[in-house]
Image (cartoon, rainbow, N blue to C red; front, side, top):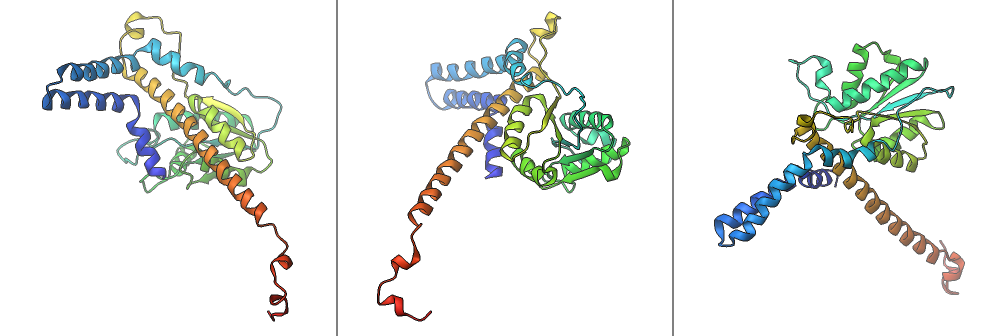
Length: 284
């Protein structure tokens, strides 16, 4: 189920979806005489690629999501744990260790370490599975953290969590009722908080890796299609699909729970009542 979810979400990303539409248009053009329909598919694909990589559109989609939670500001409230959610890495000995983390993971870890240094005695929880690699995301982040001066005794690893739901429930068994700060990308924070609340935790959000800015003034940067704006649209769509999946999953879980409750209710019968007079004398 996890792999299927990832495959479907990858195909539904803006760029693959537009390329699929364009390819369908080419197939119609090559193998049928419906040139008008083919032109519509191809034109829609080109227009779609332009729109999803156009700054005014991409930023207007992502920025509201990124600004739902404010950046972390230190207060007098003690912090026991800082949890940093993983986000990809590679294993390449030709690179410095900091380059083996994805940009997103490095941004998250940097923010987590900043908060860690503000609260002496706190501990870093690093999460993320291997994703086909021999070394988990959590362990790779730990290597970078150690290289940057974090004490080994202050690092806890959750190496088997594959998604935010698993990260949240594994964290709950570690954190308990202690105070925790949650570090993840700004676009991902709202969905992550929902999962952690479902797991019984109320972490303080510390969003990072902000991508969308409405302060871009240069027209050649603002109005030219760029890959970085395509990334913003992808982040928005990824989180939108994630929230849709959350609702589907929770609805299905509630339906199953209602069925189980109804079955338990119907089965709530005194065992004596289902014994006949003949059965009552049976030796057990």
